[in-house]
Image (tube, rainbow, N blue to C red; front, side):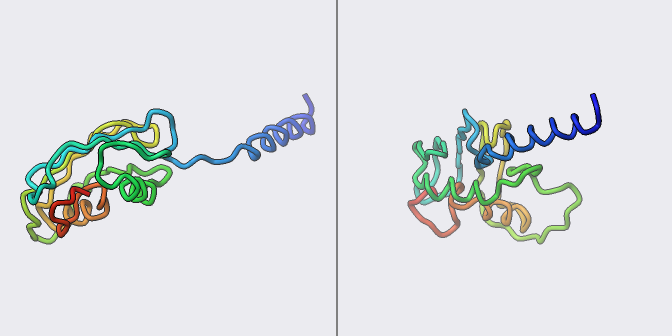
Length: 142
């Protein structure tokens, strides 16, 4: 096959692929999360189901939770990544709240835990509010 024939074939493939609309990262079939919150107080503890695109589930703020997940989803990055080992964190204590998020997001398995044990963990938690309850939302888990 000549050099020009190969280039022509590659151009045709690129044209077809370029015409396919990009889907949101979390729109893969089967994306579904289970969020379990403990020790958050004020009626915020519980287990909640969440699906996005379209939004559904028992989470108290499906729209807000899906919005924060979309905002934090980036190609090549783990949306739920833990704080990197060796990171210097302030010694703040944000309370006894814990959360576990499991399921499938952006086509990848998720099994992430959250707490508010130091400044880094508080920041990581806060980036996921309202998927996780905010510290000043009594009676509202999300």
